[in-house]
Figure 1 (cartoon, protein in one colour):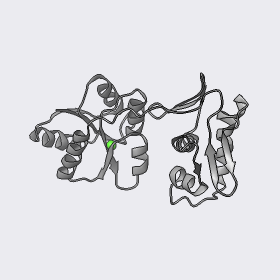
Figure 2: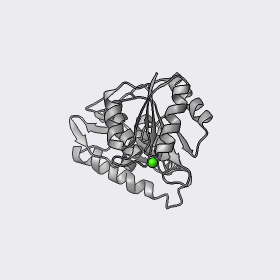
Figure 3: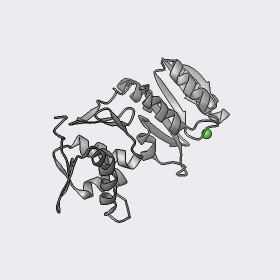
Figure 4: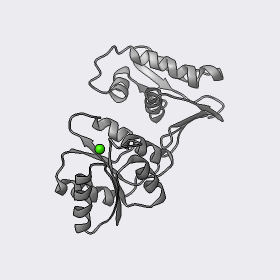
Length: 227
Ligand code: CA
């Protein structure tokens, strides 16, 4: 099985390559982000071990780009322990697993083998509620044929409402899922963002599909034309 190691620290890259070859893998090593992206696109690797801070394109962008292009090779992301960038964010980019540096090689191999057993993640299904569609793979949103640009936060909010369409989703669930359980700010932020999303998915189309259920939360319903 061929794996790609994208790592700019020569001693780590060498140790990984030597160790993985001893474990029976074929290993390609690149030391910058641009080569990493190119290799990952060109070759059907069984898995990719991807550092975050790299010369050229960083690991997050590589991961997002590959997923947006429909490349679902399992990715194990290497994160720095000093909180350089956090784990939730690593997973949010479409990485399958992450490991903080410094890591033990034995643990890395175990995690890599677990990823290989799972195989490439299937491309997630496009969500549809009435004429509204959302593609979790590319993060593209459309109302009918009209493309809608969403920020990352708006996307997360809308995805949750679409996954639970017709059900009431409480403000506290939205805060937990979209802002995180440790969100210290004003819970009214949810209303503000619901407003932003309505302005994009409803108002231009003369629709009202995100309903406010007083004291309970929000409910996304299908518009007539699409249902
Ligand atoms: Ca690095």
